[in-house]
Each structure stands twice: as structure tokens, then as C-alpha cells.
Length: 96
Image (cartoon, rainbow, N blue to C red):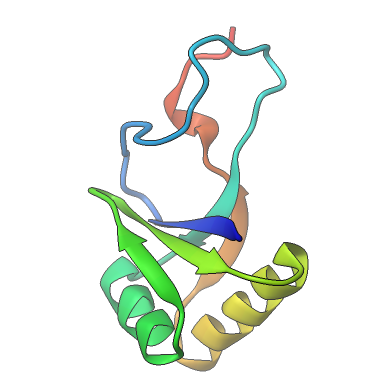
């Protein structure tokens, strides 16, 4: 089972989970940014996704082929009027 991180756009969040202690400059963490995290949480829960809530993000548990699930999740959120897209979530750490 894979987890897809979904975070609110424009909210500066501390890195909260699974970041390595040491990493190289090319480390990144793929996830989704949405314009309304609370609504995204509700939409995904109603669609039957298992969700773990974090302080500034949700972790969506997916089975099967994760890239295909990302497309499905983005389409589901956009169908509900949410602005959702893929992003690198590691903007909150220094990589110099």
C-alpha cells in the first residue's frame, strides 16, 4: 500500500513525516497540493479512501498502481471544484 500526501496550497508547513535525517540536494517528496484541504479530506473519505490526518496534511492510502491512483484522485477532486495538482513537497527544508 502506498500513501499519497495531500497538503493545503499556500500554507507553510513543517516537514512532519518520513523525511530522512540526512539527504542529498536532489531529495524530493511527491504529493498533491489543493486549495481546500478540509474539503479534499471530505471528498476522498466519501469516495472510500482510507485517510490519516496530519497537522497540515492528509495521507491517502492507495492500493494498486500509485501513479494511476494519483490521476484518479486529482480527477475526483477537480470534479468537485477543487484546484488540485502534483508538487514537490520539500520546499520546507534547506537543500543548499
